[in-house]
Length: 64
Image (cartoon, rainbow, N blue to C red):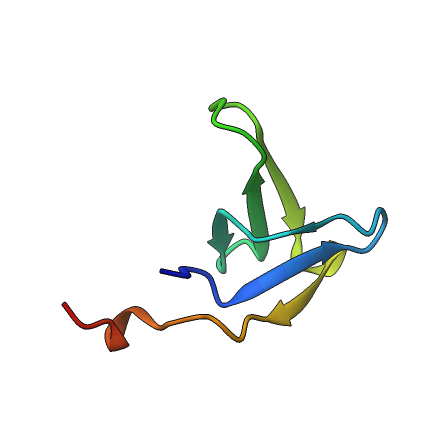
């Protein structure tokens, strides 16, 4: 299941990622590169470009 509706590209480096966490209140996306708990990197919405994912399935449309 594809949980997040966007892929992101960091404007400064061109690095592409799928957010692990999207914090709409603080306008940030978080990306955890590994399973190490302190490896979460936060980027402001203004630091990334968003691209809608074609393979995103909204949770409300999942069938059991």
